[in-house]
Amino acid sequence: MPAGVNPEQVRAVVFDLGGVFLEGGPNHVKSFGPKHGLSQERWDVIRQELFVTGDLWGQVERAELSLEAFGQQLQSRMAGHGVAVTLADALNFMGTPGEERRMPMRQEIVDACLAL
Image (cartoon, rainbow, N blue to C red; front, side, top):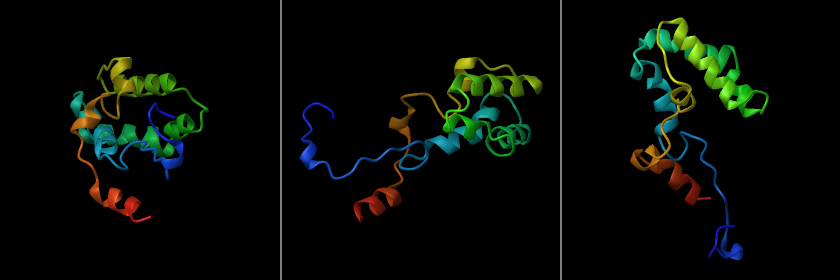
């Protein structure tokens, strides 16, 4: 519990794992390839492999694959299309830490939570 917070006053804890309260996560993923010089069409193929058909991101979420190994897979797939990205860039495919301050809040989600 953070200092200064009375546990008896806490009614709920909310975790935002990207794209729930803040719009950034999914939009950053969608634009990652073009941001690094890969066509949207080629990036869409890689995204499909990483997040859907290959289920590599699912393996990260289930702790079956490390984030670093996922980043290396992303790097490898980008390199296969002639685009080099650093491991640091690959690991930040959902946006650079700190960008959240500039991401718009999804007010409809906040309102729905407040109504609970």
